[in-house]
Structures are given as C-alpha cells and as structure tokens.
Image (cartoon, rainbow, N blue to C red; front, top):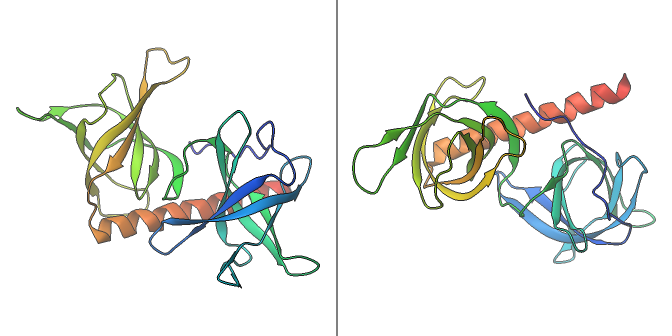
Length: 233
C-alpha cells in the first residue's frame, strides 16, 4: 500500500529558512538549487519558495511539474518532500507555489527520485564472496533508479551483495539487478523482528534504468492526481 501524504511540515519549519529545490532531469537525477521558504499555509498544503536562478536565468520549472523541496531543520535533520508546482509567479517577486504530494521524510538528500511501494521479488539471492548464492525472502519497500529499501527477517551486513529479480506493476518485462547493502536499521515495533536495508544498484543498463525512472515518475504523478481528487471531496 502506498503511504498517504503527510503534508504537515516538520516541527521547526519556518519562514525565511534556507531550502533547496530538487528538479528532476530526464534521466531521473535531481539537480538541487538553493532557495528559501517565503511563506506556507497553516496546514502545510501550500509552500511558497523563491524561484532559483542559474546563470541569470530562472531554473526551468513549469506549472504541474513534480519537484522536491529539501530543508534542514535546526538541531534535527534534513527533510525532503515531493511537491507539485501549483503556480510560477514573477510579480512582485519570482516565486514558486508548491503543494506537497507525498510524505515529508527525514533522510539524506538523494540524487534519484524515490517512491514507496510494496513489492515481493520473484528472486532474491545473497551473493557471498565464495560459495553458492543463498536464497532470501524479503519485500521491496521503496524504489528509485539508484536503489531500493529492502525489508528482511534477518540483518545483513553493509557491503553484502544481492541479486534480485522483480516486475514493476503494469510493466511486462522483469527487472534483474545486483545491489549492495549500504545501510541497515531495525523496523520499530516489528513482531517478529524485521530489518530495513538501504541497497544501491550496481551498474544498471540504460534500458533498465529508464524503465525504473518512467515508473517512478508515473507513480508520482498518480499520487499528485490522487491528492488533488481527495482535496475536492
């Protein structure tokens, strides 16, 4: 089940604080531009930021685009939220009006757009340095063109390599990839215990990366459309 948007900004989010605007490129990578928060509604459903410039030109952003807003809350962490561009304003100042279309996430800034999903791989193998591959059972919890978050009933080690195969909803061709475990964290209040593993893909071919990027952006657009429909009810 896709996580429902939590549009309330994190505690400590204030007007005039520094922020960064992540603008996706066609290959799914985010280019980050410095900006600042100029205003936001009490419910967090509208956020106004300055329109960043690069070499005396405004960053290419249009109405209905999907972008990412990142801001560091003092004495806490970096928070990132996907947003739809509701309006681009030039007068009296160059500003962007954004509406969150996903949950605020306490996270490290990522180069790739990421979406939550629940997906069971058709094949998942631990690749030891020597010996035979070991089959595992797990669930993909989120996905980007850079990697996955994988939930397992046991904890692996940073640096472990995994081979996996999975099929994205609505796409006929399965995706095969090798991923390296980078981060491990226990799942809170999980019974029986579970561990989340942040995994980075190794050398995806261009066709596979493009397929993931298309799926991620399609799912983000669906989430934005769903949020707009919910607001009209």
